[in-house]
Image (tube, rainbow, N blue to C red; front, side, top):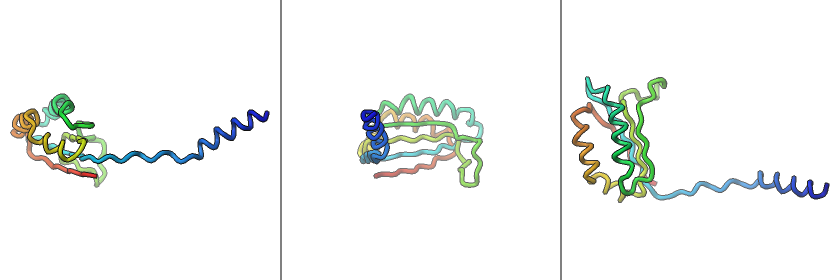
Length: 126
């Protein structure tokens, strides 16, 4: 019985131990919202696939997500003026700067710009 009490105290005391805080690492988050040009909307899924396939392996990319706008979310605060969202987490700002001039990135920009009505870029550092 005494062993059970000790075990119970140890188990419950571990639940009271504060969780280790998430480690904060320097980095940069690069977010791009793409608005497809009129008549090019059907190509949005192709853009998503190409972004993921071509950009994920680039040096300095820690994480990458590309996806279609979630049309079911229509709150007044939800931006409805884009079709594709790209979020890239870079190791640091230097990795972002190298990505900007990387030949694969430049090739994607050249290929997709004529099919876009606009882009919005949001960059954040920490």
